Image (cartoon, rainbow, N blue to C red):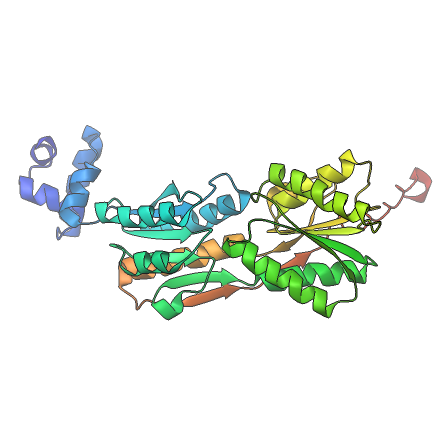
Length: 342
């Protein structure tokens, strides 16, 4: 009411101008100038109820501290923010049931859409997304056949790239350090390593499954993997890890056993995270385009929410091996030029 009085217009005109629902440009400018002078800000809850929009999109993941999801979040925000959307970060939990409960909670109307990267997917999850109250985009597995927009990558192919690289640099006894096999990444990456053992010329050093995709779980699992190879009298000369955090755990395990990386043991990761780039030794890793996947998912959800585009689109991002110190010795730096040579 104070804004209307200050602008010298009706309360109805003030409401339309502040909420973008039919006022002329001149009216909008006049009312917003008055609001600015008074320090007034529209009440977002009331605005949402009137417009039936929240200007919010949820981003739901199992581990909000994982650097992969942080990179995705930054890319999602970069796409949505210019269109007036805030990103609400949520945890799916570790189980399919908790993830489904989160999808069902969308009926509360607190967001206009959701981008979700579930660790585990089953038929009940697919049904929940199909029936969700708002548009949902899934990162991690193709669900286009169910009319669900999704963005994925070829992590199995990425594992093959890592194995081929290790074989090319002379490694012949290669073990695999994976995360839980009942997850989307665990299943795909195990499939990739199994295919690589059939195609490449190396001795399969076995697989160890960590309890989670974390450094701590990777450290424990790497010790088990290396113990088993040592007990068999065939120590490993390389480890392929299913993500960067597991790879860092493997490097720590090697150090605790007096092994050098990459001298005694070459290690590769997956996801090409910031922590892997700055770790010592810097981590050879397969980039799965985390930022790119987040960017594409945000564009998909924006199309669904703002433009009502047809559902069921599927986009992919290819893997790319980034070679660093953990799998090949760092080049010897050239000596600095002497003053008389300069």
